[in-house]
Image 1 (cartoon, rainbow, N blue to C red):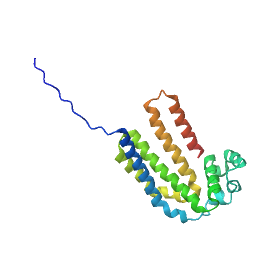
Image 2 (tube, one colour):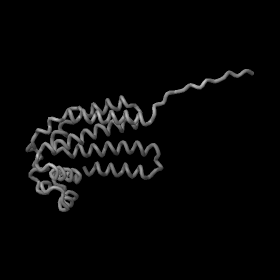
Image 3 (cartoon, rainbow, N blue to C red):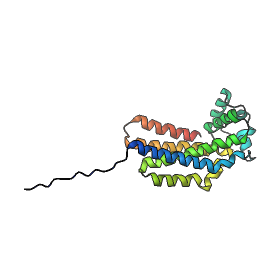
Image 4 (cartoon, rainbow, N blue to C red):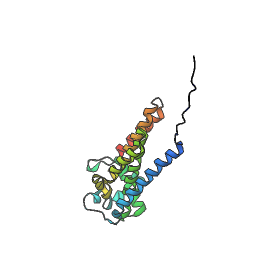
Length: 198
């Protein structure tokens, strides 16, 4: 019986580092596009719809980050919401920018930019398709429904909660690859809890 020699076919598999650099480049590019798109909000002022309750007329928030403010943020349920991370975020903004609305808006833009990048990275991690993941994340980044969350200071709770939800989604995909590792599940639970606190 005659055997024919088999040929080995070399398949070009991209280097992991190059692949991760492409993902990082896309994420940074997407975040930069978000900042460019929403840059104008830095010139906006606070509005009279809830911004007073959340920032400029709230004595706890106006004091910046304090121990009393931290305790208040954990206990407050006014306006029907319990969102201590949102309160702490506003306190940190006041600590950093005072009552200059542009700084508060800028932080919301940065959170939305981070959300878009995290969504893209999470989708890529789950699907392995960078182009499609970047496209979906770009739609999320520029969709008109996101404008309210970015341009309205009181909606900080939305961009914060989105960040932790999207991070929890990514962490769950990471956990699902090796579900026996309890630390991965703890990461998912922690991120989900932080999302609820935002």
